[in-house]
Image 1 (spheres, chains in turn orange, green):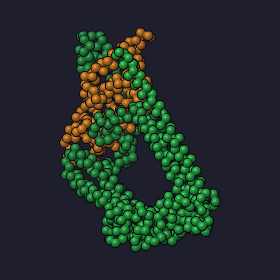
Image 2: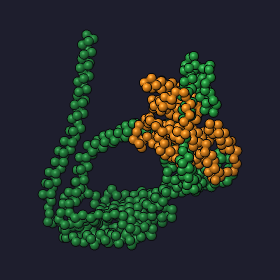
Image 3: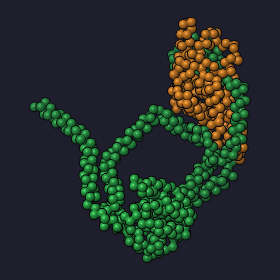
Image 4: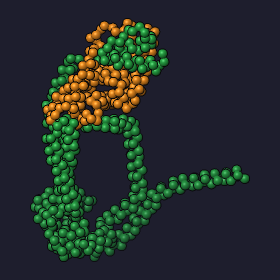
Length: 196
Length: 440
């Protein structure tokens, strides 16, 4: 799982921020490279969960990192965590995407193609094959806020605390919504199986 | 198991799952929880991964960006074009909450509502103003038109400032008086309202302008020339602009029904070296000056204020650059950088305003309203041939119609208000009556 590596990189990054002495702009570039490496996958996954098609997800991810690069010299690590900052940019980019596409901000698109990972690992983790097929449909049955939290959790691999800071809701509320969303997806999937 | 406990357990399991642990298939869990966990595991497993091709592409793009913005990353004041978009809610890395809140608020239909309210508000104000002033303004505008067109009975209506008895020396003195009067160019022999004491006293106390003095000077002329001379005079005015180191700002010409040409031209002349005064003298030689208005606005204080603010900001910039050299940690560098960027943009702003003030004070603006009159029918001579009785009658008739028009417009305001007020009054009266009857 990539998550543990990411955690290590994040820790190093934080330490680096506090230790590096006398570094100038050139150092900002190498720092940003680390940020980029650590967050490319989570950001991409989060965006892909939300927009559900690869071309758009790639576009938006590229935008996020471009904006992040431009804004990075003014980013103050004391005032916000890197993840919160990056995902704020990602959320804003998504908003822009929906707006420019002329759609309502939080409308859910059918995640028809969630990315390379979906195809490259054909081994079914669940016994019920229907469940796998129904998963996408189940995702679309979520409310916008629920989908956002599920995407941040499973795509962005964020802790509940980070999600709560990002979305301005309490940590326990994040847990509740997550729980509710999974239950909703389960109901949807079971309903789907019965209908088959 | 209660929902709360189930929820807590699920959240814990998800955390372990995301940390890379295998948490599936433990016999002691309830079926419901197991199913939820299976979905979570599936979501985690199906986490979309960027394709290698995309990663390569993005890497190349980022590398391109870094070399392109290498300079601007040092100098944050120098905003790259995309910066406005670059960091909604994240540009400064601060106050994410505030900005995303603002964004959400703006993205709502509220923006449309605010815009609509503004439009309606402006519309109401506009209509109100049109109603209140419309009739009156129309009237005065046309009054002076009629007066100057017929050229006879109502000469006193327009403020005719006769500039003939005025010397060049007198004018230069008036400009010096600008710092006390604000209205620099009142002709001493002019009409009552512009011939203020400040203008006259300026003649006596001619003081040389201090080099730092900054005055925005302008003059408005109305000049009459003989029929057929218009084009010639018009180009002479352009020549005057060039002669005194200036240029023509704008100009327009039109001819009225009886082939009399009319037009206005705005020129600017360099304000040093008494050019403004000399240019005025030249202009007065063009024809019969029927109206003249000279004004000056002293902006020295503003300018000096800008100068001291610039010095202050520049000192701060030097300090920040010193601090930058001493900065030890990234945090320090970032803090100093953002402060530096702020100061530098302040400096740019101040410099911009200084430039603007300089450009307005380095050149004086002169507008000349040039019109042809029929040869031999200049205003003084026309008295003999035109007694003005018919014109007076016409004017009186015109005034009567205008008064009627104004009354009609006023009625449009008064009638609905009266109806509304009356309706309300009746309503209240009925209400009071009904209460009284009930109390009986």
